[in-house]
Image 1 (cartoon, rainbow, N blue to C red):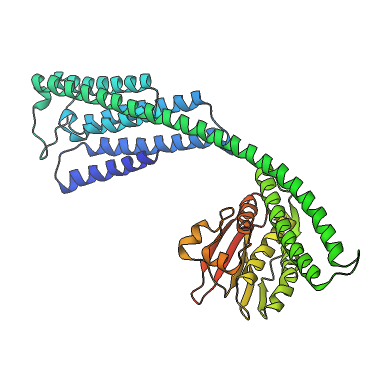
Image 2: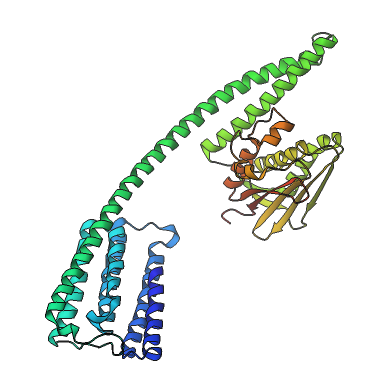
Length: 428
């Protein structure tokens, strides 16, 4: 249909230019009428397409096949009619039949493609023979092409022979290539389905494994916490130091396992428990959670929230954790005395959340990989060796499952800005 809009415009413009600027003798009225018919015809097909796909309705393959066959056949009739009124065999635009053969060979079966080629040969051959025998009028292209060729039977038979061979060869080559591509596509789809199944099995395994590990870590963490608080007895300085180290390591390991568990669970189920909630309260809670760390580093933690931002549709806990993760990252990778700022902007149907800092930034070559699981930029690893590499991947999963998008930009004065948008309502 898109190609037909181009064809309609080309036909109208070519008729005008040829008749008014080049002085070619043409039955312009007939050609303009055909242009109008093509215009109405394409609008009807467009409405038919909208009807067949109304409310995401999926038409059957048979319906699609019928519509395609009708369109290609009708286009061949229209092209033959245009050629009749513009010189017939003397019009070089007759090679446009080749384009229709290519389209038919790509979209239709091999048999249907050869039938379309046969129809094109019959239509054009019949047109040429009828004009040559005088059964229908021949419109000469005065001031453009040589005349009398349409009566030369040697030329006619030779031309029609080459024309038919060309169309059938085009169909043969295009269908052969299309069949190979379809086979490759089928194998790729099968491989993709197999990968999805393997990925699902992997996620289920990781989910069970991390759940078990988390239980053991929780027990270890609880025991160390009791010892660290000296509930079971006093500790000397060396014992206290070792217990503190063990506790810190266990806490980091617990955070890693928890993040992996949440991410895997989200990928596996694909479901979120969504409802209306106050985004403003989530932002304030996230700020409160990181204020202590910001104070320890003598950092300025500021915020700006549009007055119109309040209730949106989503999973409150996950959105709050996403915002908190971005703020924690900003605080973690910003030097002593730096600045971290969060802005929440109203964008009519969606909300923009932006967390900027004056930290180490993200190397340009690592921007595209920043949201990959377990990936950490070299400068981030230099600042903190024990990061999980799951925080940004988790944030991306949460934002995209809410129908939004997330991205990173480096600030001109240093540091970086993490931004994401999410719709205010479901289905927006």
